[in-house]
Length: 155
Image (tube, rainbow, N blue to C red; front, side):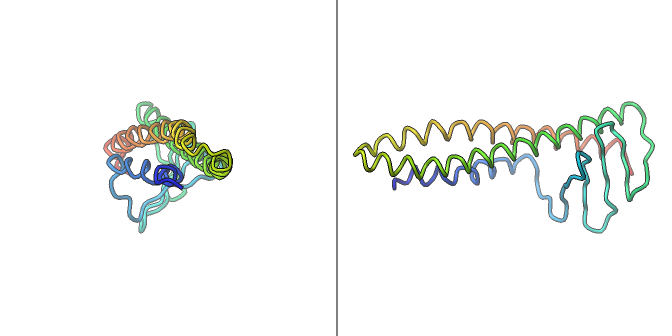
């Protein structure tokens, strides 16, 4: 198997690594979901949750927000969901590419057309790369919104 094909099979890792400029270190921090409610967990701090309406809860207690803060929290919520959805789509596309690659390699080797392997994998890899690039952009927007939330909501 040619090195390009192997690289395409592991395309997801390098593309997502390119996103690292947007997020910085998140050691001890992560986001999870309860339904469509975003739950932010930070080691040593109470959990914070944001729902689609922009309602904020910290440690289970509702936090009062003004209309501008609520709009910001709604944007944060939708951006977290966009990152999640693009991540899922990228993963599914990567898995599909891996399965497709096995068949493509076998078919083209048997047919004596190994040069078609690179062409096929490159074209399919571009679709995954576009989705992963979208996720990187999502992460950049999310980081900017997160910084605004932190600045506007001391809680």
